[in-house]
Structure formats: C-alpha cells, structure tokens
Length: 96
Image (cartoon, rainbow, N blue to C red; front, top):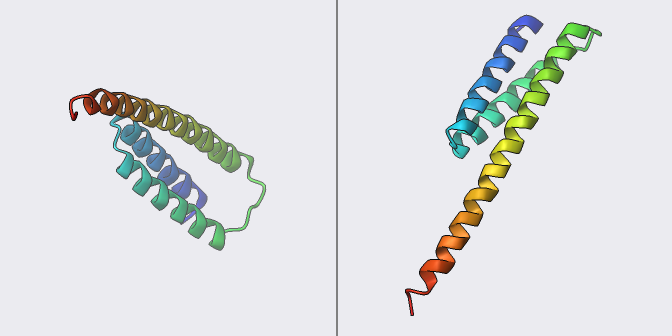
C-alpha cells in the first residue's frame, strides 16, 4: 500500500468512525478504531517516514478529527450513564 492509498483508507475509517459515533453504535466505533490502528501499525512497519509534509498533515488532520469524534462519543456515553443512573434511582423506589 502506498501513502496515497493509506491516507485514503485512513480517511475512510475516520468517516466510518464519525458515522458510528453519530449513530451511537459504540461497539462499531471500537471495531473500526481497532481496524484503523492495525492498518496504521502495519503501514508504519513497512514504510519509513520520508519527511513528506502532506502525508503528515493528512495524518494530523485525521488525528484531530478522531479526537473530536472520541470526545463527542465520551460525552454522549457520560450523558447516557447519567440518564441511566437517574432512571435506576427512580425505579428503585418501586421495588420497595
């Protein structure tokens, strides 16, 4: 896989991750992230950095996009946990 193919595939994973976050499909987010990490690891094992500024800028943009998606997912998970805890406290009164 050359750098252009790698960047294209990496960007595709980012798009899929953002879609999974928006759909609140956390299992899919995890699977996509693991696959993306594996691809990155395999690419870096077979390709040495050559100072290609465009390549590193593209990776940096992908990393920034991922950080935003992960922050959004984390905030949503906290919101869901808080809602679930509130609901459980409310329902616990009915058990008595």
